[in-house]
Image 1 (spheres, one colour):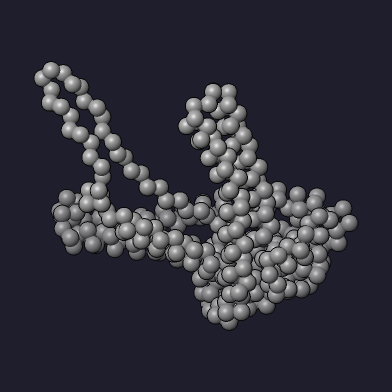
Image 2: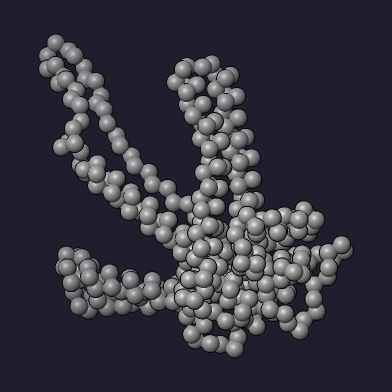
Length: 346
């Protein structure tokens, strides 16, 4: 039995070369926009932590000490920032995060469209896929909530038990239970999220269906090829690991070269224009000049590494789609080429 998760490594190289070359500036610019918002390692979750320290330390009450003032209840006037401002900032950040997540889902669908047609367009496919993007966004939002609930429930139970001064044994058992529930829920969440992102989403594009229909179409394929997809998980991890190492090396080289040039420019400004570092930071113009140099340096690094990100994004997506097409020929989204087709699973 052939392992098409391994064979697809080479197939993805051919598909990537065919898709990206010959070079087309307009297509690469559109791919650059997609690469900014669509990643290959899954989505990130941002957490906001607000730390408020309140209270007072009791003072001694010796015979010569003055009595401690009675504690006062905090009032809105005593807070450093108005509560409504904090809520407004949190709400704005939440809306921005949700908007970026929806944009990411939309551009992912757009990219699959581009891989299928061998031509990348943004506006037309985005308008056509926005409904699917909303359903995909809603599905993942519900998925996050569903898998967070058991963890929150167990954590709340442990907290209530601690407040009720349960014995050490009960607390230990509760803590272990919380860890076990979190581990199981995390594993199941990762599996469902990865399948949805890597296989169900392209099926949605291929069949013009929703998330649940995509899952119903993929489920028999997964169930009939468990060993193949088990190998895929291992190979996919190794591929991403090798890519991450390569990207890190290239990024360090690029950042080192551009950083040296930026450092020389900063030295020219500090020593040649203002005479010293102290004089530079004491001057508004000096601070602005250093800020511009830093910003330009980071921008140049970003622009120089963006083609690598485009290449990586295209290759990883092509690999995932090659595995999907090898598992079920009817689900082959990549255009047919002249290479030898992948073996049919037993």
